[in-house]
Every structure is written in C-alpha cells, then in structure tokens.
Length: 445
Image (cartoon, rainbow, N blue to C red; front, side, top):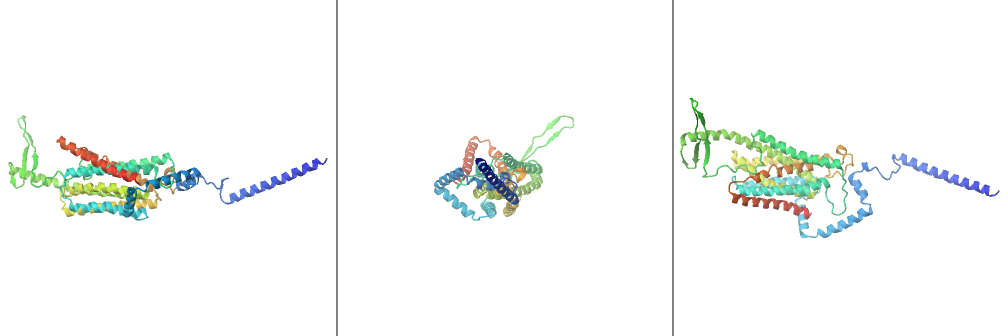
C-alpha cells in the first residue's frame, strides 16, 4: 500500500511545477503586452516597418555576410593602391571638399557655368564648324557615358560600398517607378523642344551647336534669289526665271538697282524673326540649365562619385553648347558683350535648378537610395521618396540631349565624300574619347 501515497506525492509535485510554469509564462506575456508590442516575438520587428538601412544593419550581423564583406574589403584595398585611383580621389576631394552634398552641388554649378562662359571672350563668333562638330561629338560621348555607366546603375542598384557587401532589395514596383521617372524626363524635353519648334515656325531649338555658322563672313558673297511667277491674260501661262542678285563687298554686279532694294527689304523683314529666334533660344537655354542644376543636386545626393562624373559630363557638354548659342546671338544682332551677358543670365537657371534640387532632397528626405524610408512607407507603397525621383528624371533628359537633340547634327553630311569621311572618323573618335573618360573614372573609382 506504500506506493500509492508516493505516487500521489509525485503527482502533487508535478502539479505544483506546472502551476509555477504557467504563472511564469503568464507574467512574461503580460509584461510583453504592457510594453506596447502585440507581437509574440518583440525582439524582431515587422520587416515591412524596417527601412533599408535598418534591414542592411541586421543582415551585416549574419556570419556569411560578414565574411563576404571582409573579402570585398580586402580586394578593394588591394586595387585602390594604384596611382590612378588615388589621383582621381585626390582630384575629386580637391574640387568638392565639403561634407554636405548640397554645398558640393553648388560648387559644381559654379564649375559648369563660369568657365564655359568665360571662354566666350576668347571665342570668335564665326568659329570653325568642323571644330565645333568634334566638340559636340565629344560631349555626346560624355553624356551617354555618364548616363549608361553611372546614372542608370546608380538609379536601379544604388551606390557600391567598397568596404562591405551591400543589400540590394528587388522591388518590382520600385523599379517601375524609377523607369517612369526616366521616361518623364525624356518626354519633358521632347515637349519643350516641340513647343519651341512650334513657336519658331519649325526652326526649333537645336541646342545651339550649329547655329550661326552659315552667316557670311568678310569678303563673301551674299546671294539672294527672288523668284516671280506671272500668267498672261490670254490664258497662255508663262514662268519667269528667278532673278539672281549678288551683292559683294566693295562692288556691285548686275541688277544692282532693284535687286539691292529687294535684298535690303528682305533683310529688314528677316531681322525680327531672327531676333525672336535668339530670344527663344535664351529661354530654352535657361530651362535647359535648370535641368542641369537638378542633375547636380540629384547626383551629389546619390554619391560624391556620381556627382563628380555628372559634373564632368555636363561641363564638356556646356562648352560647345555655349559657343553655338553665342554665335546665334551674335547673328541675331547682339554685340559680343551683349551676347556674353545674355549667356551669363541663362547660367542663373543652373543655380536655380540646383537650389530647387537641394530643397526637394532635403524636404523629401531624399538620400539617393531610399534607405531612410520603410519598404512600404514611400511613394505608392515603395521605399522611394520624391527626392529619389530627381536622378532618374535627369537621366531621361540626358538621354534626350545625347541622342535625339544632338545625334541628328552628327548625321548631317555634305557633297564632299572624302571630307565627310574624315569628319566622321573624327566624330567617332571624339565620341569614344568622351565615353572612355567616363568609363575610366568609373572603373578606377
């Protein structure tokens, strides 16, 4: 009979232990509820509430990720000992010494606005079209190289961190919105160019690269054709040949009386439209410079390297751009000093665009990669902010300027096949040189 009391004692002990365990579990649950967490695992917050930076910090604690980061850091330290990498880094640090991206963006705006306009003082109004064509081709290579090698990879993948393995979160809707922003930038420039072509009667704003090179120089003949058609009263049609009038410097040829008067009348009638074209070109340049300023702000907020390469690309684009617009203004009746002053006025647009871009980045919490925003707390349920949309917008404008707006000028040919072949080879070499510089900077970053 002894075992039965012993069994009852064991059962009572087990019951007491179970009661203590349940009480401890209830106390732990109540303390977790009082802390405001409704989750059964308060140590692990919901992934959707994490920002990309917080999620990346959690992943860095993983042993596999830590090992990958160590391998990447050692490989980067072995490759950055080259003199080209250190020279590029020192040059960028010298040009953009500030820690705040907004200050560096303002410095870049001064770099792309000041020197190209100062070069106009040394530029003759009748610059050689062949030299300008080579500069345009070089600018095309720089713009497309910056867009394809720097901007688009930065937009969709973010900035590479040489010291550690970095998280790249694939969000389909996020990539779609970035692509939409690229398209909006492209279409915005299409609309601006189309509007200017309508306003000028089809002439359009050709970014000034080939404006002003067809006007006559000293000692050249100015040829004016006046074509008239008349019909006889008796129904017998008759076409009169166009009367060709030539006015040369220091002399006159046939038709000097009536022809000279007609030529002067046509020249006076053309002056208002030519001046209107010059003013519309200034407005277009002002708008174009605003987008350059937006590009400066967006690129520096993305990363210092992207900002530096974008500055270089815009700088090389602005030189032929400013030279061509300067020639157009001189042809429109501006003096050389007035044309230079007008170009400095249009350069204010770049400063305005930079300030707008800085304001959008600061007020929109734009960090260039959406790392400070929750994965579903941004635009349309993504991690994007309005500040993050500036860089793809400017990439779209670069694609338009580097292709639709400029490539047709490089495709124009003349009757001399040998000269056109030589010019084409020079243009291709200039394009490859401009793109090669962008690739070199990106490769040795």
